[in-house]
Image (cartoon, rainbow, N blue to C red; front, side):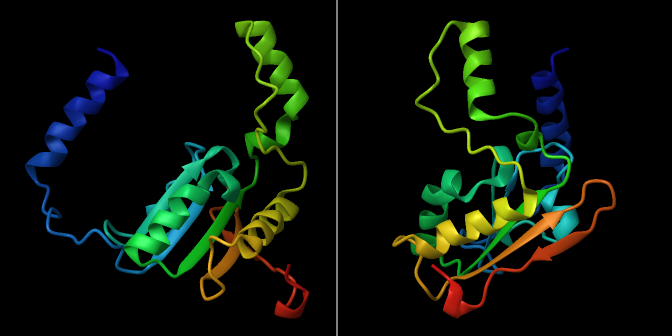
Amino acid sequence: MSVSDELLEANTKYAKTFDRGELPMPPARRLAVVTCMDARIVPSRQLGLEEGDAHVIRNAGGRARDALRSLVISERLLGTNEIAVIHHTDCGMLTFTNPDLHAKVKRDLGADSTDIDFLTFSDLEESVREDIAFLLSSPLIPADIRIRGFVYDVHTGTLTEVHFPSDSERP
């Protein structure tokens, strides 16, 4: 049995007791979470979220630049007014650089990926600050959207806020 077959089997069991079909489309807590795709991260458990509470946007590294399209839809069409950017310890994005991955893609696939910025980083807290700065400076994210950043520790389960300079120092 393939993993996809296992997913279908699990979904059949889930659907038998599913009772959340009447939830509204806009998230109840008006929150959008941008976090990493790392399989050790389960935002609903770690953040106390239920179905319908928040939009959870995931990508490699939890990068805001990658999530911008979804954030604009979330806020403009579905009413979110707060963004939580959450990166995490032991992130794979800390283990390589753009040139490393470009070379690997070329070697493994014979394809040129040099037009892709994989948004790697070498400093975890600084990457959170960069993402906050990016969102604050984007004309697509209005000034009234609250933005906060955090680092999730995959070894302890704790969430720590990454402080950003005061409003007068923001971009």
